[in-house]
Length: 261
Length: 153
Image 1 (tube, each protein chain N blue to C red):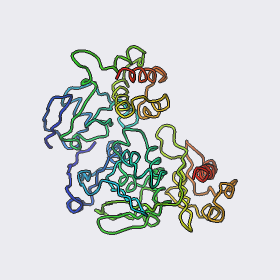
Image 2: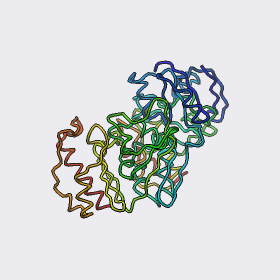
Image 3: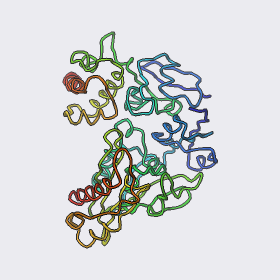
Image 4: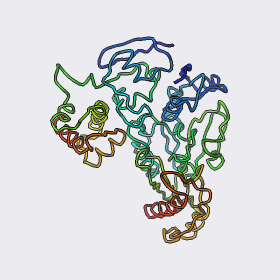
């Protein structure tokens, strides 16, 4: 791994002041460090944000669950408050990677990285999340721009993610048996007057499947999406699954999610 | 370059190390604690698992600077007065290892499981050991060893 300078920021202000075109924020490091070791990314400065107290913790109000960006997956999966307010979010966190990854990896890191197969981006889309940064608030629907791309500007730091509590929800994934990343993951959430079907792993970036959302809004039953023939032309195709298999998996996982709601 | 201060296996250590030093490198090359193994070096195999402030993590994917000031336990820190830890005993008794390369990480990970779940089921053990790869045993005896250790810890 190439040399870099390690900084630990005390607050968001210091973190963004230290940021430059050749720096990265370091949260759990579960993607950043392997990427640097493999030479896929090089930075002059790593700015550790885990010691910024404001960035960790979970707050639940009547309508939303707000999770600090540096909150670890294990804290989300173990939180009684999250389990009560949005059980599907807690079980999503419990299914990420392995225990050691969950002991280190953070929700903010996962979202900022926007891996096309990551779990949390689907929760953001399904639960109409608002991403709070040190500069502004961004709706999840406008945050995830493409493969590993987000609306974040250089030096902009995610501080918290605010999830809307749905009436019902479930996240179901077909995991890669080795990495536990989603080959396809579907997060279904029924809100008052709205249904989201957020899909991860299938395309280059998480998306809300409008066709299934519409069908489920008419009749919230797995029968209303049974046998749906999704367009697979933009779906990923690799050694793990072909595009057609992914299209089929999206429907299967969505049906499972609706049945589990 | 910065000063890394840790408590490793109950002993206070302080050493200068470059900022890009991984915890696994710090343990193996700066402290000569080579019980922590580096297998894949891409955080998949779990041979490098150690405990930091009571929780297991992959030391090959953690910067030493990042855990500055913490308490670290490695496989070398498990024995008491020359007696193996019950988890080590169980692995030995039930043949939970063959070549032994994955064993330090397997043992450290399994101990963390029993700290959090005193009586895990077979499924819970297998789920927990998701991040530890063994290419010899076929896992059966590892699961049996963890169950045996659960009765002793």
